[in-house]
Length: 347
Ligand code: DOR
Ligand code: ZN
Image 1 (cartoon, helix red, strand yellow):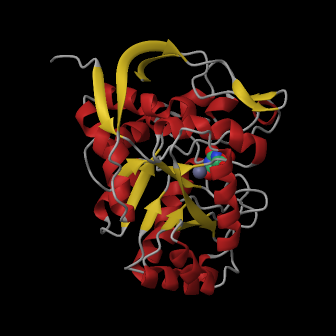
Image 2 (cartoon, rainbow, N blue to C red):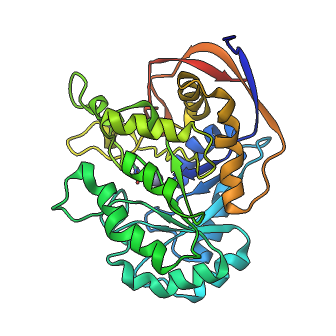
């Protein structure tokens, strides 16, 4: 087999991204905008992005923070709460820039305190989204503390997701950052209403990475990394060319002070070298020719958006990910795989 030294792809999009706000936003946005044409921007700010007016203001802050010369389109989301008014959905669709609504089960992850406490409370909103064609993005983990943390995704499928898809068969749903064979199989077997995003870190790492030589906060994210058999199932699925699975980094920066502490925040900052990491996985899986559709076609198709037309090039080149990058004052962000060598580089 001949080894490829260079690949050219349609400019990709990131269908799941945390950009934060203020100085943090200004620090991380250029990393994403350099690689991706668009991104679905998560609404879990403090306070969360709940209304279309919140989303409009946040979108403006993103565009203001965008360095000159980079073209990037933020695709906004609303944070679903127990009390989201039904009328907000038509407003979201009419805005043209709100592309989805995000369900965080209350307590599931960073800034999810205002999340949904019980799914029934959102039925009227979900019915309206089904009617108007606005997708629901789910953080698919059950929050019942009695459930083992490694089983929360599988439990969510059984208790919440499967009944939800039956109740709203016309609702488009994206199961975000899938981590298990259970999720991969479920998404494959469900109808066209359901798709999934896959992160680079869940493709590259298994749960041992959280404990190698000691506790590793930079490998702690939510959903947590899973056992190797699950990682392999997710890799096989993501690299198979199935259009229900597409790129979503879930890049989630936290300052070093929030990671190197007794209770470390969950999230991997992968935006710095996101595309290169995906290229590495697809190459390892012998599926480099499937990368473009995963990164640049399937997400746009699912959301009913045009595919990008410009191109980017990745070269086979060994380089080292920096130890840290500027983030907050005297409080940098440590990128995923800091100090390690990777083998693809975007030119
Ligand atoms: O690891 C994560 N970090 N998972 C999430 O769901 C949220 C995110 C964050 O906002 O930090
Ligand atoms: Zn996320």
